[in-house]
Length: 261
Length: 259
Image (cartoon, rainbow over the protein chains, first blue to last red):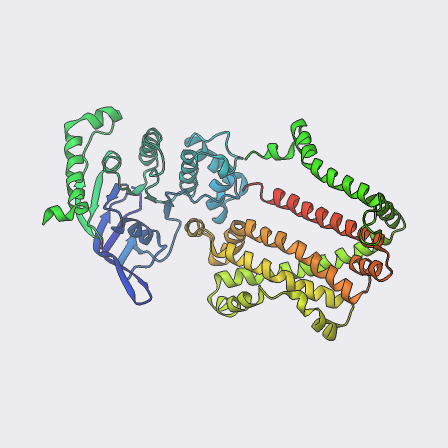
């Protein structure tokens, strides 16, 4: 069985700047079993990106515990790979240079590096662009390079921060299907942050809805659809629409709180 | 921006370059005519042709080449010292809290000081020789390099640093693998700003303190009422400044072909 089991308990994150204390995440507990595709949706500013960066080890928790396979998270590690919304590619490195970076850091020999990187470059339909610099690529291609770069060093867990947020609809759908293929083939645990309900429900096995500021877990909806079908068939089905509405309703309560009162 | 576009030089480029020098040619022609007609006193502004002849003579007999070498050597040695210190201190100031506490105020105060005002002080301290000139160039060029390096290094996208760290880059490797390449455009901009400053300081110092160099032979022209020599030297320094600036641009273009 694949590894990459994430356990988060009673997580709290407070940002302090001077005398001001802002609580971003409040008492959040979450379990992501290995191999699961979990999406996190929430109103903007609810701390969903903060949650992701905490799991990534970029930020330090104020209290609570986080662990991957019973190993407490203590800074960034190669067992987790982040895909950023703005790609965060190294502009001074070519496509090949970006994809081999992680392997280089982990001491993989040059030949081996290139052949492994090539596999992911091909997987992302980027062959022929190996020697291009990021500035020469479109947004969709940059995101594919970023994904290939992260996959190449083989993290157990993919942490994705609205990775397709800046792309147009057709491109986004294309990359969503691409991601699903990869997730199935490579057996990764995925934590996917998005504000797009459609995207969350289409991609995930489970969607977690977060409350508004300070963010914590509000509800969690299991998305149980037959993924062997085509996108159209999935989206048109009644059960899918029901689940989507459920997530949407739950999220709407958070974005329009005054109507609740 | 395509790389090949920038290096090729086709017919339209040639025509455009031609067009852009028309105005210059007209001004130079007016200069020649007005001075040949004696409308301006020879001492103020000799005819261009006289200056060009003298420039040619002084180049062939080696005068301009020798003194040009002295000037460029002082300027570049000072510039290299300034760049070395400026890059190290600029990076440190941006990434280290103690260095920032120490150097930030010094840089803020030091940057706007007109370094030329220190020439007399340096004459006291170091005399009129090369050392004096080189140290002053180094000080004058240090500020723009340090400030540009500091700002560029401080503004490196946090996501790039995070990306590198998640792929196993240690804090120690981070500087060489990510921070320096990411801030390379700002670092080179600082050097490009410092280059003409290095020439200005050297030139002025040579005028005041002598010891050879283009600044020295220009002021010599004034002292001997030889205005043709003054202008011929001016042409030499213009050519040198232009060539060095172009050279540095080429370096930038080569190193930063990814921008």
